[in-house]
Image (cartoon, rainbow, N blue to C red; front, side, top):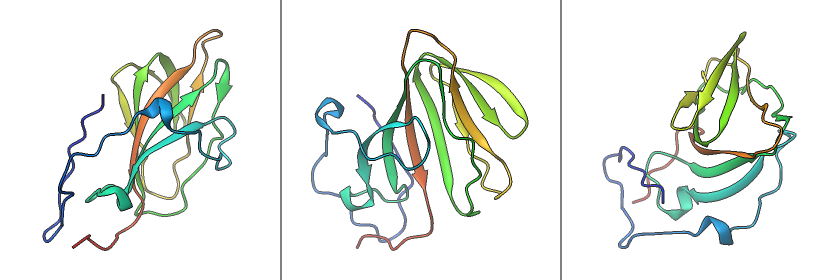
Length: 140
């Protein structure tokens, strides 16, 4: 189970009950050009998020690399938290080991490329991803 706490903007209307989803029952989402992401969308703004706009899991098969890319907006904030396994986080011109429980924050400068490499030959790895894509209307 993932418990996520986010800042709530003034005037925000929360849900009246707890919302839970079983990731195992969520179909894989269509791929967005990342080459290898196996994405399961958990929650979005429409589900009652206040500040965040997307919470999902991203799984990588063995010996795969996500397409290195630069996000072309400076107001997008993304965080990739490793749930299991050990990967190489490629951020800018550096490779860093990322292990279970570690996260990396995509630098929203419109210049810094990032990617993830699963170098394990046998095991999938999984991330909890959350993001804020742009300023958005608060649900009232």
